[in-house]
Length: 173
Image (cartoon, rainbow, N blue to C red; front, side):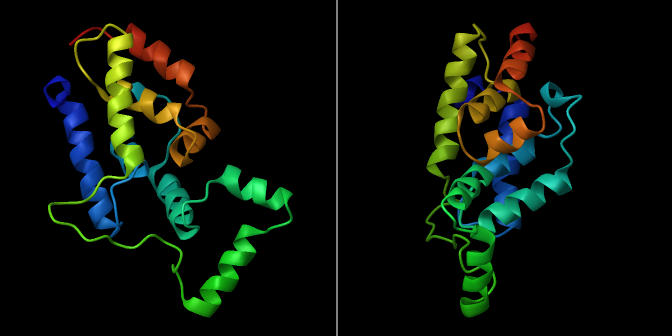
């Protein structure tokens, strides 16, 4: 699969690892991959300020991986996630719910969702009849999921349909 990656896609994966290391994440997650793709041409014209997204992802990690949709569902059951987290952090310390570093033998471990995104990006490339795997295919795979990245992108008007339209019009490289 790696031989089909464009230079841009390879660099995005490497940048995701560097970003995960920079924030001392336990694993390289899909949020790191999105941050690495922010300058990709396929995202041109969308308002995706890095600082804002980093803040959203920090909050996501602080909440132990709960998305806004998860928090809303719990709120519907009468559970205020922010209040619970504040209480836990007052008792046990700030950031206690953040996943911690795992033991590593070689480099940063990849979250299962990260690996699945790369697999799905290959499918997206094939479905579009492309002979390469680029940033647009990775973004399509990120938008397939129901997690934090798809939620953040959809809230900002980046939809699967729009990226698919842009990817379909891209010329084979």
